[in-house]
Image 1 (cartoon, rainbow, N blue to C red):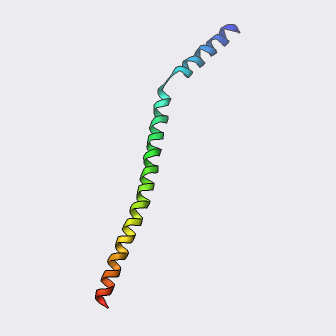
Image 2 (image 1 turned 135 degrees about the vertical axis):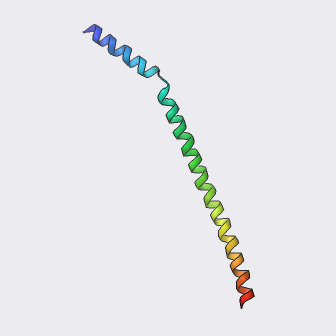
Image 3 (image 1 turned 90 degrees about the vertical axis):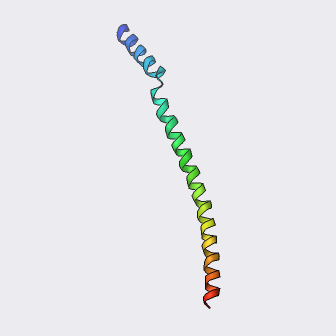
Length: 65
């Protein structure tokens, strides 16, 4: 019984000391940060484009009428 618990303890310590899974978490956090930044940037870009096209529309509308 003691050897089985000792083996289980050693196996658990081996799993706890591995750093392989941390890389995946770090990459996921970087991707999430980039996605958040891109989303915020796209909103600002869309607002600017909307204003520019409204200005063009107003200018063209005044030339037509």
